Length: 125
Image (cartoon, rainbow, N blue to C red; front, side, top):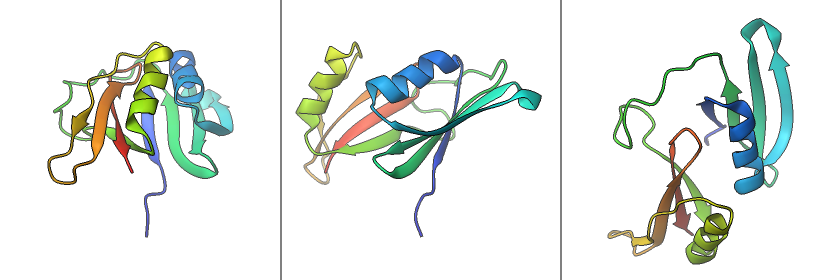
C-alpha cells in the first residue's frame, strides 16, 4: 500500500536528533526512552506524515562502507527546489555534493549525509 516508516539507528542520539529536527526540519511526533534497552526512540514526520523512527542503542556497529554497502544505500527526500534546499543545508553547515541531473528523468538531485554518514539524497519533484 505504501511505506509506513524508515528506521535509523544512530551513534550519538543528541547529535542525530538535532540534525533531523533542526537541520532537516522534521517534526517530532513522540520521543520515548526505553530503560530496558537503554534506547531512545524518536518518531519523526514530514508535515503530518510519519516517516522516520530514530533509535539509539549502546555501541551500534558502524556502517561498513559508503555508499555501496549491502542494505539501505541511501534515503531520498523529495523537494520542490533542489537549488534552494542545497543552499539552505549549506547555510546550516552541511557539506553538500554538487547538483547532478538524473539521466533518465532529467530531474536535479544532490547528496549530503547525516551525522553517521548515511547518504541522504534530495530529489526534485
